[in-house]
Image 1 (cartoon, rainbow, N blue to C red):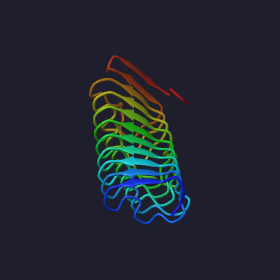
Image 2 (tube, rainbow, N blue to C red; image 1 turned 45 degrees about the vertical axis):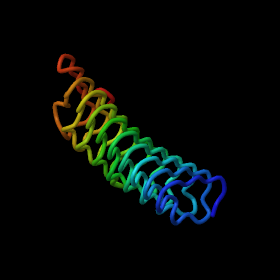
Image 3 (spheres, one colour; image 1 turned 60 degrees about the horizontal axis):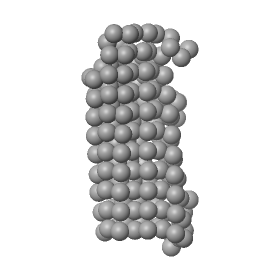
Image 4 (cartoon, helix red, strand yellow; image 1 turned 180 degrees about the horizontal axis):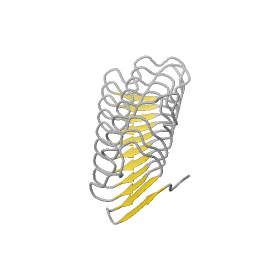
Amino acid sequence: DGLYNTALGHQALGTATSTDYNTAIGYRTLAAIIQGGEENTAVGFSALATNSTGARNAAFGSGSLQNNTIGGKNVGIGWNTLFTATTSSNQTAIGYGALQNMITNSANDTEGNVALGYNAGTALTYGGANILLGYQAGDALTTGSNNLILGYDIDAPSATGNNQLNFGNIIFGSNVNS
């Protein structure tokens, strides 16, 4: 049911009831979507597979946003981007494995991360407003927020710290956004 939906693939939009404006291409894409999960695009094996009511997500790649249930306004491009994120919103992950272990915790602000690059931010579970740019940039960061990490295989001084800056292991800073 619903209006203006497009599905191509086994179980694509499989449980759609009265949701509109979704595009699902691939096996199990948007398979669990129900009423309220609108304006999503999923392309690739199990992309947005468990999304039920999350809206305005874009997932391109096998496993991209696979475990999202109610999170909205996320972009995942690449294999397993934002794979474990269930209720996170406003995340951008581009590159193989980027932000793949992101978990939402109601006690933490975990929104607004941007990770671009192979495995950028891959270990991040709780933390928000991080900008991680480059091959494996910030891949050791686990719970920090408001960090800015730029470069090839560059990490923050602390895996759990906030407001850190590291540009190519040349320029460092702390209390960046405090």
